[in-house]
Length: 168
Image (cartoon, rainbow, N blue to C red; front, side, top):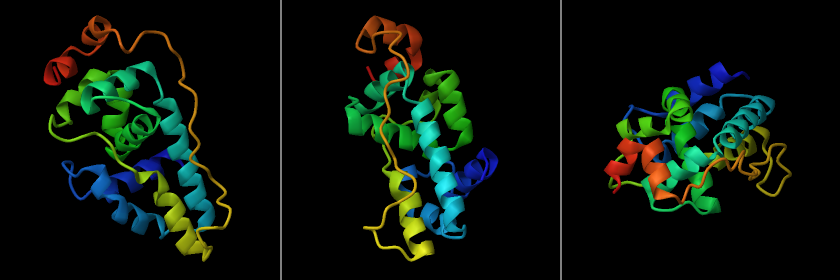
């Protein structure tokens, strides 16, 4: 499993660019079930690394703007949504979170609980019950850096002017 195949599976799980990742989980599970158990675990490791990489002040601030807050679970579900939106959206947002203004809706939260898709697919493929130890764990991580205050409205507006305006 490499990142190219990872992103291909994510893209195939979305019937259209407008599809919300939370609605794509059943299709994602079906696609993952076509892999063997080890490949599913590898896919999950890439997912976890991308979620960890996105645990930054920039993404927390974007989550606060879009979803109205960013608790531990909400922040994680936001990062799952970000991954579920696909490679282009993810990479653009990592480089410039203000780019999310082009893909978010003011009336829908940017959250998706797709973190368990690989585990669910793995159970089916391996025949293991949900009580069996899963070789990949969706562990929360520490914020990569706290290089600026995400609660400072002026700083958020400076860094993400379009998102700030959309959700003001």
